[in-house]
Image (cartoon, rainbow, N blue to C red; front, side):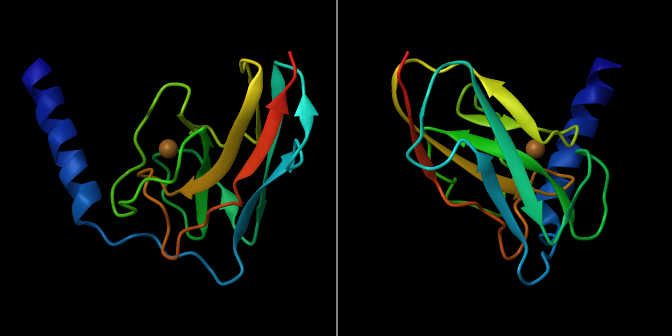
Length: 140
Ligand SMILES: [Cu+2]
């Protein structure tokens, strides 16, 4: 059973690598609704995600012009957009149920936030749908 699970994972990974990236329609956008760029906030911080020109669907569910949000915290967009976005605790967070907001506990200081839409396999679309990176200051 365990070997089967490992083999299945390996197969899924190779399928994800081999496939073409999901197309995104012209004008598709994701953006951080709140907080605003430059905002001073207190932790925990409620972050609201916006999407335009595409729809949200859970991870694992293949649908045209659709995907789920990934929030990048104090990190840059990975350079390889052909690979699934990794899970990096407190840095790259997947919202694979199609969530549109989250609550973040952040230490005081400046932090950057950015959204990347990923398809059913967590792979960015082509062209990639990436928000502007915003900077916020947590005051306490
Ligand atoms: Cu994902």
